[in-house]
Image (cartoon, rainbow, N blue to C red; front, top):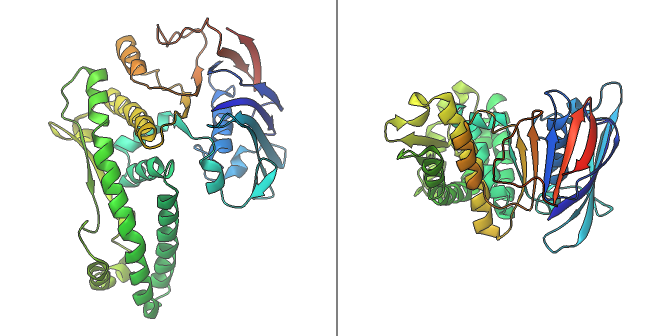
Length: 366
């Protein structure tokens, strides 16, 4: 899989033009605010139909214009050349795959799997439980369309149940309780399996990079016990109705599940330094890539946004050696910074470097 060419129009501060990306490594060098991360965001949108920077794509439209358009030409896992086009105008998003408009972005996300490494990933470690739920749900939806559908159905039922609670339509709750139980059980089973498999990868990479015997562990703590039947869950929801009505929301279910990171000293975030949390978030992304390879046999595309800045030279070198294989990687760096060491020979054919300034990409093969 390789993205061969990008075309961007009216996307953030990037000056509308075509960008050659036909190389294994794409190096983007420039000061902050010049457009490096914006290009990674454009690639991510073309892969997933959504942004890792904002939930409102209107924010990505260049100021003073009313729309953006993105397109890519890529080769898929079968070495077939394909094309994606995504536009956003008047609050509506349109996705075309090989010239055919698609209504469900699920048809897009399995064509060109990518993993973004960003500074915000630290929130998977130190942030609210919903951040870790989102990480593990994303890990599964990358390879499992059944989980993707199950998660959608659960969220739809949850939305309707919460609306009924707020409107005091209690006569509807029996129906929604049954549906919530039916939709929620597959999520619990899937999350339990992925957490166990993920935990077999994550600690070893963290210890190898940090040179610690950390005792790192990720535990899954579901809101509903894993062995609960549908009837038991329905009973639990019924018993909690008074609390739900008082809180104006559904207070139990997979949307309340927790993934807890611990080490030999207990809760990891309680005693970890910022550097340790940053490293652990990087390792979570590497483990995500390794897990994806185990499940699919494919190497994803990497989008790495200045995430190596806070690692010292030794940790950086060790981390890169555990980064794993990729079909293509986009790296953003500040000018003159040397982060690769011996990991990548940027003088070899197959690397393409851009200097980024004021939304312009000045290229030259290294």
